[in-house]
Image (cartoon, rainbow, N blue to C red; front, top):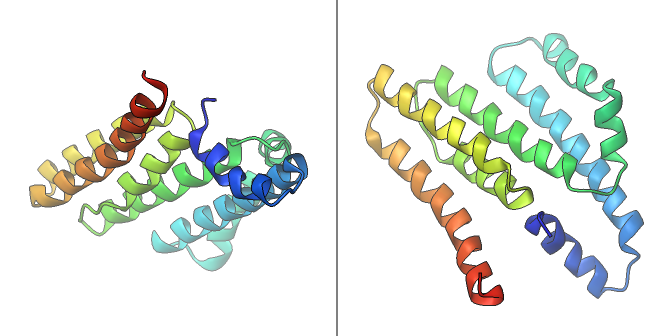
Length: 166
């Protein structure tokens, strides 16, 4: 598997004897809805009026690829949710001139969803480093972001090493 978090999320449903195919499709739709809520909330936090903030999730929901993947039963919309939440927080932190661990937490979960999340997390940490320097913020926020992300991804890698031997 390449989508550890999706497998872990489905495990309890399988243990309860539920059919995983429809369960995965329902979870995909729920994560898609969560993604749209996250996009809306980011718009509101960045100062868009309610109607203006609503345009963003409407555009997202009208994207045929987004809709198809939401119903596909794969981890795609879960990944989109974590990325939307992470970058949404990153943008609002930037606007408020602070550096929090929330983007690192969300993008750590995105990396556990799909390995390509590491690229997006690298961009996020780079942005936080630039933001910290330009806005003359304390290094504490950037340090904690790095620690949180490393703990999530490093913990998963340690598990893989212990369990699979690689």
